[in-house]
Image 1 (tube, rainbow, N blue to C red):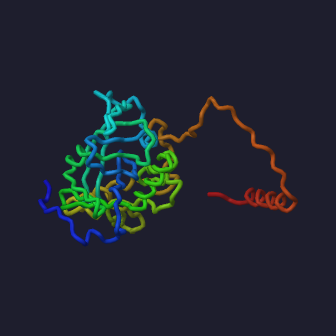
Image 2 (image 1 turned 90 degrees about the vertical axis):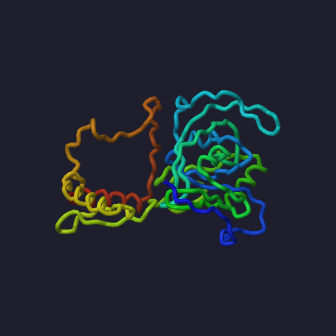
Image 3 (image 1 turned 135 degrees about the vertical axis):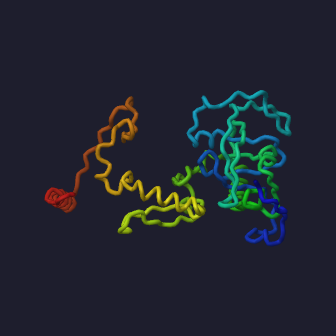
Length: 290
């Protein structure tokens, strides 16, 4: 159930927007568990487009693509054949004013400065209203009106890549949620969508876990009591993991078995470096490890 609120735009929404401008609306959000930058909100496009550079970075096998019923025709009347169609979970906004829906994308093998084109079908499903002037898109959520802001720096970077004839292959713009994959621009690590509270689950208060602040009573109390009753299933120390059956969990080194091993060239150390290396090895041999 959504809270019925009036979606409106005021001068307060212009805070942080560089004026004057004629920038399009380019946002960042989570698609299929990946934080995707350079999503262009295009009311002139009827369909959503996911470019293959972004599709490949998500690690989705092409066998999951469904065949398309026809070509995609642009305003130049040129017909383009999509690689296929795929439906992916799309999260817009920040908790608690956040919405998740399934959006169908056409996967296009084209070079583009953007990763995704968000068309009218998706905007209608989201009940979203974009404003390029305010560089913002607003939408309805169960907790009120959600907001996603455009990044004018990304917008202008896309424009420069477009006029240079470069595409998203030159920028690592896809990030696995909670895993940093960005290579060209260093940014803050993705944080949890809500504040976490630390709760002790033993009598001494030495063993603690974190639960979301969004849990309300009586669910919160029931969750804490359940965790306290099952503290023995937590691995608090490495030796708690002894005897885990391989069919439950195992670690392996992901290497290509068909690649020939390469022997590293022997490096010759100077007298000082060689002595330091020998001293370090001797120190480790004498050390006691628990």
